[in-house]
Image 1 (tube, rainbow, N blue to C red):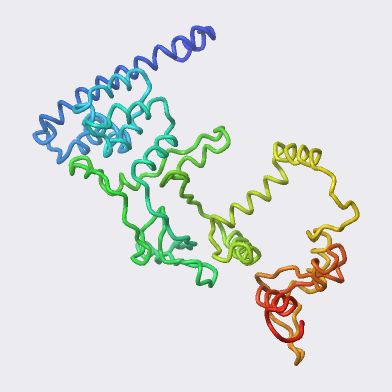
Image 2 (tube, one colour):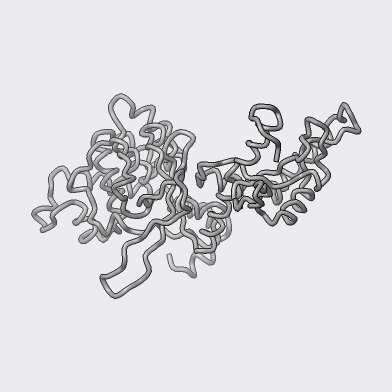
Length: 381
């Protein structure tokens, strides 16, 4: 049917025709898989001058490398578990799901596993695999991508990041080679037959692009990978400006997250963003304020330092620890700063008076607390 004939179809006819064509396509796919499985069993690709079934599918049948890989997986699984063909014909199980589940299927778990995989998105399949074969946690890494150089002489990527003992930066890149200092053992899985393994260019084939009009979050499909129950791995690239922001955020959050893990940094940033922009969170916050009971002592000033006081104190102290040694030397620390009550709140000091608040680094804040409350001798600074 040409385009002009399709254009003349009514909305109902077009909808029904499309449903029929999709069902026919699934039936044709099942037929292809059945023939492909028998073709593979007889190893007929060899006499035809192909070294593997994968080569035959890509060179003779003109499948794309990804399509060949998935069809070979499904065909071989169908030889052992024919019920997958029924699920494919019904549209309840996709080839990508079969390829992902193939190493984990067994006579004992196939019924339960296939049932759990039916009608699921690929993201759900990834979560299911994370339950079956959890992957170890990976070390945070910030890696600078190589710049283009003369043909065949691209410089190797370099690992960069804040100079922090708690942030490990050896070469581990989820989308590239893994360095020896951060290599983690992969989750065990069944070996893939040699005739199924695609050539290097197939393994490196880029994922299918996301359509311009895709729904929000669709671009994350190939950037987020579940690795264990409740854990996912993120991967993206950014520019030097983003790197500086990440490093600054690690410094600002040092007192709360001294390890500087990227997970904590981005979680804090997203919490702040959503608190400002998410209408649902604003409504929840408004409801909580409406339900909040009146304080027992209406005239008592709370301990929490308001933001306007913090801003004034930060500007006054120049974003630097305000501790001054007896010889007049002022502490140089600008990271991990905390807001300190000069007269402690427990002793009647105010939180709403900038004159009673100052910036101190963690060491000098704790030192003063020890002296003030008798755990260390010597005058308070």
